[in-house]
Image (cartoon, rainbow, N blue to C red):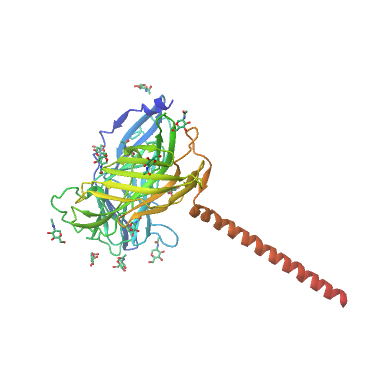
Length: 411
Ligand SMILES: *[C@@H]1O[C@H](CO)[C@@H](O)[C@H](O)[C@H]1NC(C)=O
Ligand SMILES: *[C@@H]1O[C@H](CO)[C@@H](O)[C@H](O)[C@H]1NC(C)=O
Ligand SMILES: *[C@@H]1O[C@H](CO)[C@@H](O)[C@H](O)[C@H]1NC(C)=O
Ligand SMILES: *[C@@H]1O[C@H](CO)[C@@H](O)[C@H](O)[C@H]1NC(C)=O
Ligand SMILES: *[C@@H]1O[C@H](CO)[C@@H](O)[C@H](O)[C@H]1NC(C)=O
Ligand SMILES: *[C@@H]1O[C@H](CO)[C@@H](O)[C@H](O)[C@H]1NC(C)=O
Ligand SMILES: *[C@@H]1O[C@H](CO)[C@@H](O)[C@H](O)[C@H]1NC(C)=O
Ligand SMILES: *[C@@H]1O[C@H](CO)[C@@H](O)[C@H](O)[C@H]1NC(C)=O
Ligand SMILES: *[C@@H]1O[C@H](CO)[C@@H](O)[C@H](O)[C@H]1NC(C)=O
Ligand SMILES: *[C@@H]1O[C@H](CO)[C@@H](O)[C@H](O)[C@H]1NC(C)=O
Ligand SMILES: *[C@@H]1O[C@H](CO)[C@@H](O)[C@H](O)[C@H]1NC(C)=O
Ligand SMILES: *[C@@H]1O[C@H](CO)[C@@H](O)[C@H](O)[C@H]1NC(C)=O
């Protein structure tokens, strides 16, 4: 069944002109708020009578600013909608915080009744797919520039939007793209070749979206799983950049599918070693047998990225993070920041670990982190205080009624 779905043939529509940069502009009256030059390819899977077909559709040059575009305001986010072909559109919703702006939501909508683009489609539906994982993020008052292509997956549909040759700006103070640019990390040269001609603003790192959680495990000598971990990891590294000849902060996500893992399990210590993308990261957990609790007590990290002027290597063996009870797992669904040394910290997302006493390759019951508990506590407290308030009003009302009733009787 899924095999059949996967066996869709890739058709590249030759009759369409190759993807060209499209220029779009969103205005309110005469003031421009969003301007974008961009190229895009869409990989779309649609049903045909005996299976599915995959097509790559470029954003045509004829794309125009479409219905739904808006400069936002009053609780509405700025939105750039590019309409093209027979009822298709690409929408970018912007958000701004902390002196940055970003594409918060990307939506692709396509009309399967367009038989020129979707030959033999057995559906006539309008399909709408969206993603909030675009990496487009720039400093306010600068133009986001990215020549490199980046693919954004639309949920779990297997369909993607590939963007390239982008120059765009939202929340524009004037109608021209700023000459100050925020260049995407994929465009920053990784060697000491000629510097870029445009002024690059590297002081604020581009914050990537939340990392994808990876599943890691360690087996002991007899082949049973002794350590289990599920976590999304984001590395915050301060290093001397070759290309920029200064110290910069880089925030990068560990890509689970490019990370290999190994480790060891001893009676009172266990390690998990993650290797990938020229980075080695080791977590050491220790067990306190008397209190039957464990913790992450050491982190070692070494990296040899192309842009690093020297090998980056740090470690700290006196940490007290991710504390859990033997036989149980430690879980934290909210982001946790684990400072390791001044130049290195780890941001964890969607984390669950159990470094000792794993039974049947499954996590034990979870010890939930404090931050997550606090998060759950807020609605409970609000609810309880509301209930309390209602009770007080009710009692006040009853007392008031009784008094006036009593007063009436004595007359
Ligand atoms: C986009 O699609 C065209 C064909 O339609 C292809 O030639 C081009 O290489 C694709 N570009 C990217 C960046 O995927
Ligand atoms: C569907 O049918 C077409 C011809 O009608 C054939 O070329 C194609 O291989 C078939 N696809 C599948 C998945 O069976
Ligand atoms: C357009 O600008 C005017 C005044 O500057 C403002 O009142 C209005 O809400 C804006 N409309 C949109 C859609 O942004
Ligand atoms: C993106 O926006 C569309 C349309 O406004 C909405 O239906 C969808 O839920 C949003 N998706 C995400 C991931 O926020
Ligand atoms: C952006 O530019 C506008 C107008 O020049 C200015 O008022 C605003 O403070 C600037 N914002 C930032 C974050 O630099
Ligand atoms: C570019 O940035 C510099 C320093 O941040 C600022 O002085 C200058 O006004 C900016 N130029 C534009 C066109 O925004
Ligand atoms: C595997 O070895 C561990 C100690 O290393 C032991 O506790 C466990 O019982 C062994 N499991 C099996 C199935 O032999
Ligand atoms: C990265 O680390 C620096 C220095 O510790 C800190 O100021 C910054 O907020 C961190 N950024 C993120 C996104 O974790
Ligand atoms: C890097 O910067 C230092 C001082 O900031 C300077 O002395 C050195 O020449 C620079 N190196 C390169 C390759 O530009
Ligand atoms: C890894 O995952 C990313 C997105 O999740 C995907 O784009 C990429 O192709 C994957 N790489 C490999 C080697 O599987
Ligand atoms: C881990 O435990 C083993 C024996 O249980 C011991 O030999 C080793 O030194 C310990 N490693 C660390 C880092 O504590
Ligand atoms: C990672 O560890 C391997 C094996 O010990 C080593 O060969 C490699 O150089 C290390 N890489 C980094 C970036 O430290």
